[in-house]
Length: 267
Image (tube, rainbow, N blue to C red):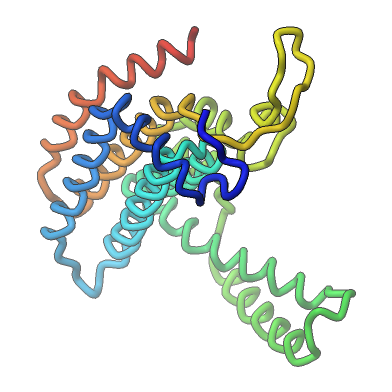
């Protein structure tokens, strides 16, 4: 085990582990890089009209998904499993929204309105501040924003969509109840997720605490990220009225890794 006590994931020692891990999962890493390249190639074909807000939003969401995919990849290469799960969760959330609004205009309206509702929530927090964090000028501005948003909401019928709603509309509710629920443990720092930092002996006695690279999530996390990216790419290309044959080819390439990841999860 290489020494990581000085700088951990930011040190020079971890580079040896990174090289070893890449060699062990070389074909999967290369496939992830190929998927990423295909997405960039697809972006070259994008031509947007200033009048089509739906395409604008979906295009921006797809770029965010690509960024989260690359972030997941970088974290997996360094064995940062918990952080990779946090990034993967963000990727999956964006996928839920992108796919749902590509299928349903009400989901698109809800996505836009959700931002207004979040602004309203923030305005209320500023107005109700008891710790004197915000100035009177801040509170006055927040009251004005609150009034404007409330006036807007009075004129329209709206329904607050949550992550599960977007997942259901996208036809990906099974993702929400399985992988999304599982990786949320890392986001919320649950007690179960903390166990990975304990070094236990054969009798489950705690010998020490540890913060070291971990390859346990390489296959599952990277495979799931590739799958989510490909699903998003298909919806993105469909909305832009582009050929999606590349997504079918990607599915076939990814299938053996998905089957292996499922096997490990079941065992």
